[in-house]
Image (cartoon, rainbow, N blue to C red):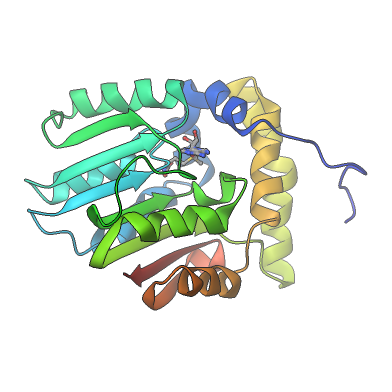
Length: 237
Ligand SMILES: C[S@@+](CC[C@H](N)C(=O)[O-])C[C@H]1O[C@@H](n2cnc3c(N)ncnc32)[C@H](O)[C@@H]1O
C-alpha cells in the first residue's frame, strides 16, 4: 500500500499500552471527538445487565466500560481484568474516585486464559481489546467459556477501514494524522502507529461473526457504528 513502510513494525502490545496510560483516556476522546463515549454507551445499553448480574469486562484498560455498567445498573457486580499493571493502577483509582469499589473488582488477568471458571458470568464484554490479542479467536472462545448459558457476550471493536473515499480518508487519519499528533501529545508515536496496524489487519465483521458462532454463541449479530469505523457484536451463550 502506498505510503506504508516496506517492513511492518513489530509491536510489544504491553509496552504499547503501558506507555500511553497517562494520556490514554484524554487522547481517545480527542481522536474520536468523544464518539468513543457513545460507542461504549451503546454497549452498556445492549448488555441487558440486571441489578443481580455478574459481569466480566475483559481487557478493561482504564475501566470506562466497567464504570459505566456499574453506574447504570446499581447493585451489579463487575470483575474487570487487564494484563497491564499500569492500566490496572489507573482503573483502580478511577473506580475508587467514582465510589464504585463495592461493585467493581479490578485484577490482573489474561484474555487468552481468563482466570475464572466456566459459566461464571451473565454478561462478558470486551471493548477495543480483542484486536490487540495475538489470537482473537481464542479470546472469543474464552469469553464464551466463562459466560453462563443464556448469558450475553459483547464485543466492541474497530473494523478495517471500509472501501471508498470515506474509508481512504479514515485510513489516512489512522496511518498518518494520529501517529503524528498522538506522538506529539503522548511522546510515543509507535503506540499510535500500532493503532493503524492493528485496525487494518483486524478481522472483517463477517469473519468475527463466524468466529463467535464457532465459539458456540447463538443469535449472533453486529451493529455498524459511525459509518463502519467500529462495530458492536452481540451473541448469547
Ligand atoms: C485498546 S485498550 C482498550 C481498553 C478499554 N477496554 C477501552 O475500551 O478503552 C486494550 C487493552 O487490552 C489490554 N490487553 C492486551 N492484551 C491483553 C491480554 N492478553 N489480556 C488482557 N488484557 C490485554 C491492554 O493492556 C489494554 O489495556
